[in-house]
Length: 157
Image 1 (cartoon, rainbow, N blue to C red):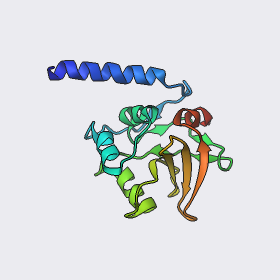
Image 2: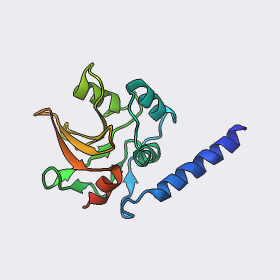
Image 3: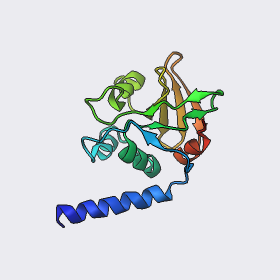
Image 4: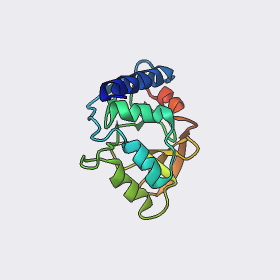
């Protein structure tokens, strides 16, 4: 298969996945950065032995480092902020690799950060697909939602 055909199939695949997402139709993403490596999520999965849910993969691939216009959620406490997706580009500021190191050090990965609240805390996914809040001051993990789609549906202005 030539590169052009492969690119077309890849685009169709991600459009279909995006249409499958049951997130709020009101969410738009700004300040996104193009991924330097489209296979980065596969590499992270292999490196950390951590399966990223398809709905989250789609959002990261489309909106890397983006900021949602609806960014407030009310778990674990009212008025929490989903500032932005972390960047999955190693050379960018506020990237996933730096946050992984902050949370886990050299220990085995139990949660994968994908978002920031802008105050040093992280929004993460567990190996079961649940979304949790990592409080960096207390080093505590607090539940937010049972899935990424549920988390997106909780976001409001």
